[in-house]
Image (tube, rainbow, N blue to C red; front, side, top):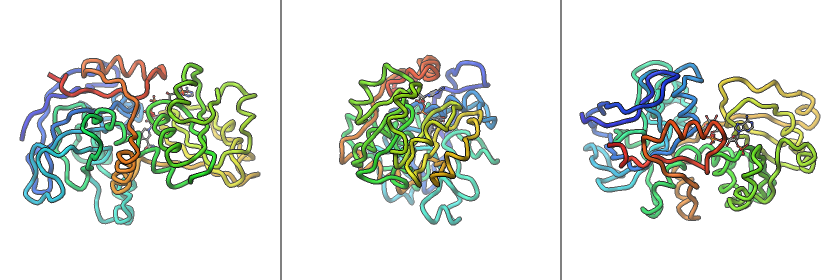
Length: 348
Ligand code: NAP
Ligand code: ZN
């Protein structure tokens, strides 16, 4: 057992502050990781503030973890001390249900164990990546093949990357016209990945100030979603839309942009529901509204390897651990360029 300095939320309204936790003894299949960087996901904020009504306190958020292996259990075969590794949103699952057998551990029929605040369906709390170290089963540890100089910008791939990669792979293909709604942490990864996959990307944003960035990141068209005349230009044109918005909003305007049989997939997880969509927009063109949760471990490794091969990382603003509360406030104002990443060496 070793102690780790962390940043923790103690309740839904106070600022996060320093705390010390104990990590478990290494089991034979465990890997002990010194955390170098951890991305800041909007889900961390939803959880720290109990917006999903399931937070166990103290809560140590963080599920975009990149670090260096410092010890391995006796049965570990794929990693050795000194390797650079990643940990995403999950640290365990039952391993034998139909979803686990399909490599879709995020849909484990017994509920996967979250990297933090998990299992929410019972059992002990888990503590995430705003920490100096973490102990994780080998099965949930990812190999990082990027240049070591890119590690901070790789961290957000562990959640923002896989959460956008998985639905893009499932619902869209090269040559298709794809919409991305919201240019935040998830949205900017969706733009980069869809572009690299050969799709024509239309970015929908509420922020006029992000137009130039969206184009630089790989969007072929940018549409200010509050302007009906701009939205109308894309009516019935899109094969697929990935909606990453973290707040409730009216979905009809986007559903109208889908072609016949097109799908809009929601990955944004606001605490309050969206207004119910108008069914006629769906039934007259057999359109579909879907959801998607992160991605399995196998496809997370595929996404990381694709990104290493194509030189894809996140656009980040590196912060010290003590700046986390300020980062949350900026995230709430859609002022993220485009992912905050905590440099864990500042956790002293
Ligand atoms: P983020 O960095 O805060 O980005 C969200 C973006 O949504 C903002 O930058 C903004 O983009 C847009 N937006 C925010 N408020 C809006 C509003 N009221 N109306 C319209 N647009 C608004 O958040 P994130 O980390 O990307 O996460 C996005 C959501 O996905 C969160 O709810 C998070 O919990 C969820 N999530 C889900 C999964 C999953 O597995 N399904 C995984 C990770 C995260 P513009 O300025 O461009 O409009
Ligand atoms: Zn996340």
